[in-house]
Image (cartoon, rainbow, N blue to C red; front, side, top):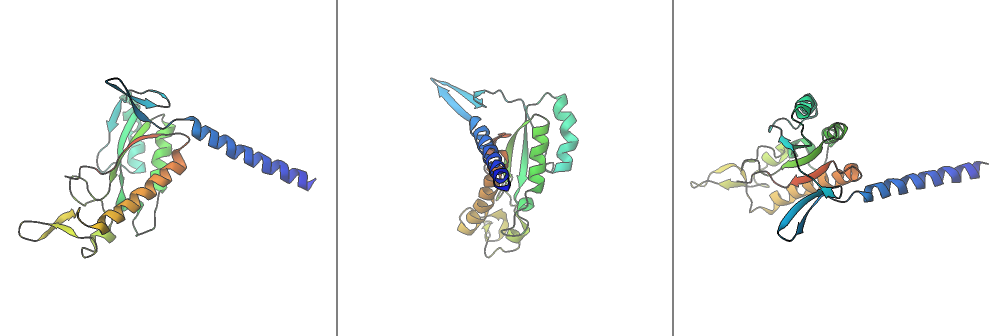
Length: 198
């Protein structure tokens, strides 16, 4: 009896995983499709006209996004563009916190909205304001751009492999996590890799 029950539960679990995988694979990845001279943005395999709104630079937090749901609905939006902050998802080097990220995505999904993510990583408006404090605190490891007088300014150098690798690691972690939690729903339909490098 126990073996039969165990097999049945195992089979149910396997079927649930297979169904989940099939569902995830049933929704195609959003893409631009070119036919002749015309480009069409496809979401869920159908043409998609984005009726989008962008939140403010300091609004990509769960409580602020939730308070904006009524405004999104009043504007009849189907897509919201919002920032994801490097310093929030990786406050300590190598330790990622996606709790707020997940909460926002669940909220958008619950409202029937799609999302475009703005990655506030190495740059936002050309400055390093959203880089984590552990990056800002170590200018030797993470060098800055120098002004005409040779003094560092609040811009991470694009010539530094350490800057690139740290940002790339965080961005890759975010995208890997996004795939894990959003592959079946495809709430996120676009990502801007860096915001206004300047």
